[in-house]
Length: 86
Image 1 (cartoon, rainbow, N blue to C red):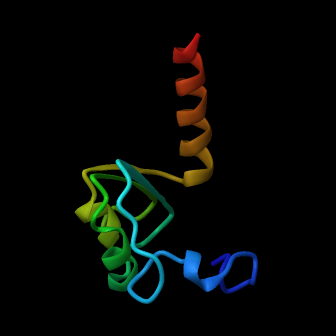
Image 2 (cartoon, one colour):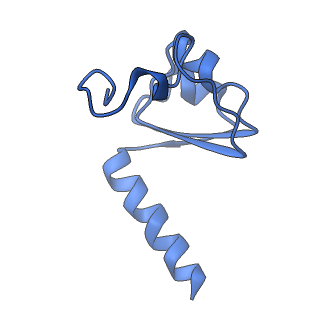
Image 3 (cartoon, rainbow, N blue to C red):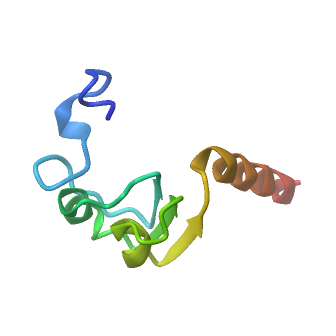
């Protein structure tokens, strides 16, 4: 994770011992959903999980899930949003 690499402070890490978040929508890209991370993200109003593993904890608990490679799915989502913006 970026916090382990020193790119961001530990306080920015979402999880039980890090930051707890509660956005309108949390896009969990490639996140398996370990219990520690889930505790930090579970207050989100809606969760969209993008993962290749349909059995991943985050996928099974998310409001919506896309089973696929995040490197393919995210560019497709961005392209769709941009096309709808006109």
